[in-house]
Structures are given as structure tokens and as C-alpha cells.
Length: 380
Image (cartoon, rainbow, N blue to C red; front, side):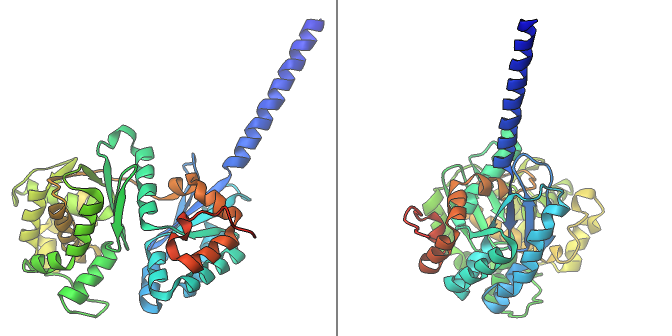
């Protein structure tokens, strides 16, 4: 009888310890992350399938005003409402990372104004908001893809073309620039087509634009080669490639309209070059016709505006980087990628959250690289 009571007592103790440990673990992991990109905000947390996002055109605001102060009310509302929309726990510590549009706001409007914007957002929402340097964003992207894809990711580098930025990243190296789909289209219109209008029509792009664009991007391509080398293997994972370029190349290959290898896993540079040559002289209507009016499932969104206006300029951008970096083939994986896992696992985020006024001071003093600076001497 005594033995049984001891066993029951031991079992109760172990159960209590397990419960305490589980509760402590849950408390430690109750951290939300917000991915604040150039076109919207997404919320997620580690080891949870729940997520939610809302569109918010930060690039439009920073292009118009050189800062993002006008977005404060909408940003705060999204930070407060998205966790409920995603059915995520309440009362969690919340952090946010701002990327290409936010870096551009520092560049154009100044670090002090950007810090004031972050301070207002934190005071009104309780979310610790950081502007993430380009190379750190690249490492976040690689971590997210590696975590999501596992053994399906077979290359050491990934390519992410977003709305405001482009980055190549591996586990320990990376390079990026403000050459996302939207920002490249704007630069193409203004500097190659000499069209300053917001509604600039890119098609027909023109085969002759290849040389102009090569000269325009020469400095960035040299910088990428210096940082990354060349002839490395890379997987493209973002929508401009996975939902635009790759499906279009597969369609053209099936119609025997181009040379070069295109398969379900990727394509050769020669196929991309042939497609650009074929499509560069076509108008929007002619592109729709070549795409078979997008009757196939793989091309069902390719004919929609504004996507029809960007496919060929996207091809031009990718082709020039593949040429410059001597990449003979591009692998393709579609991933619902976000930077939240990298953000939440970054020890710098945790440290700066505990010294947030100091982070804002360092941001005002040192700009975007403040995030990577030592915070041991913060006194607040």
C-alpha cells in the first residue's frame, strides 16, 4: 500500500513538473512575428500553421512622400487585427521586420524620420518594429525556404524577387538590391522608356532594350558577382518566377516556340533568352494571344492586369543577372515564403526588444546598420 502511495506521489510530481515545463515552453514560444514587405503585412509564429496578411502599398507611399508616416494608422490597425484574424494567441510578445520599402524610406527621408515612425507604431501597437538590412533579409529568406522545403531544396542559393527588392542568399552569404518587380518596372519606364507616368506601359519592351538595361544594371551585377562569385546553383522561389516566367516558358516550350530546356523543375538560360527575344516586341494583346488567352490552369493569372505588364520586364531582369553571374540554369520551387521564422529566431531581435529606445537612438545615429550593431552599452 505504501509502495502504491509513493508511486502515485511520484507520478503526480512528474506530471506537475511536465505541466510546469510545458507552460514555461509555451510562454517562451508565445512570440508573434510580422513580415512588413513592400506590398503588405503578414503575421505568423513558429510551429503554427496559422497566418494572415493584408495588402498595404508601402512602396507607393515612399515613392510619393519619401517617408512612411502616412501609413502609421493603417499599420497599427493591421498589427492589432491580424493576430485575431489568424486565430493566434493573445498577449504574445510581438516583433516586426520592415524590409525594402522601409530601407528606401531611410534612404530618401532620413533615418531620424524613420525612427520617429517606428516609435509611433510601437507606442500605439506595442509591437517592436525593426528595419532589417538587405543581407539579413536574405539570410531570413534562406532559413524560411530551407525550413519549408527540406530536401526539396537542392541548391546552395535561393533567389527572391519581391515587389521592392531582389536578393540572392545562402546559409552564410548574400547580396541584394532595390530591384524588385515594382521598382525595376519603374526604373525601366523612367530610364529606358523615358516615361515618367505612373501608368507607363512597358509592352512592347523592345529587343533593343536588352543593351540599355545591361548598361543600366552593370554596377549592380558587378556588385553581385563580387559578393557571390559566379556559376553557382540557385533556386528561384518568388511569384514573378514561379507564377509568371516559369509557367510562360513551359507554355512556349509545349507550343514549340523556343529552344532550350524547360521542365517542371526549372529552365535553362538559353530558353529564357529565346523567350525574351520572342516576346519583347509584343503588345499586351499580342502577349495574351501567344499565351493562348491563358486558358490553361498554369497561366490563368498571367493575362490579368497588372501581371501582363511585367512578365517581359521580369524576364529581362532575370536574364541579365543570369548572364552576369554565368548561371546556365534556374531551378524553381513555389514557396509561400515569409521572413517571420528568421526574424523570430534572430537573437538580435530579442536583445533589441529589451533595449528598444536604444535601438531607435542607434537607428537615428547609424541608419539601417544599427540593427547589426552591438547593444551591450545601451544604458536605458
